Image (cartoon, rainbow, N blue to C red; front, side, top):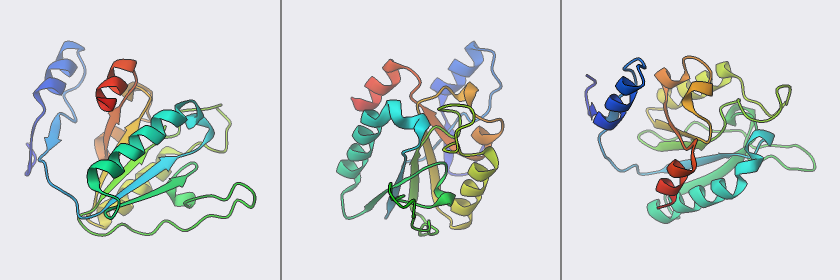
Length: 175
């Protein structure tokens, strides 16, 4: 049991039925964040999901309000820089998020696209992203189109990851 969280009974039952380890079965209690940073992965692995990314990012802006949301793009991981210029490749440095803010990342976590693609983010880089957000006392949430079983080992234990790996999940998110 973690302080400030409650059991996610639906996830617990689903994992039990699939004979999966009973980890990451907590839901954080609802609270509002004074600032939301939406980071959208525009790498090669996320190209097939471009419309979904645009939809989801727009929904977060609509819900939280334009004045509380900063929407940025990246390739690989945010550590490589934000808002890459397609002609020069120049990027802006990703700054540490404010305390108690929410960092929402829409990404493939390095599992999409061709195996040798330079657009892939490495698991160690994602661990560094999680550590940076935690050190800022902010919350990190990841949304990915890939099933959790495809993600690098250990990432689900250090960050909250939600998968929309089926049409049903995306329809629920879009609903």
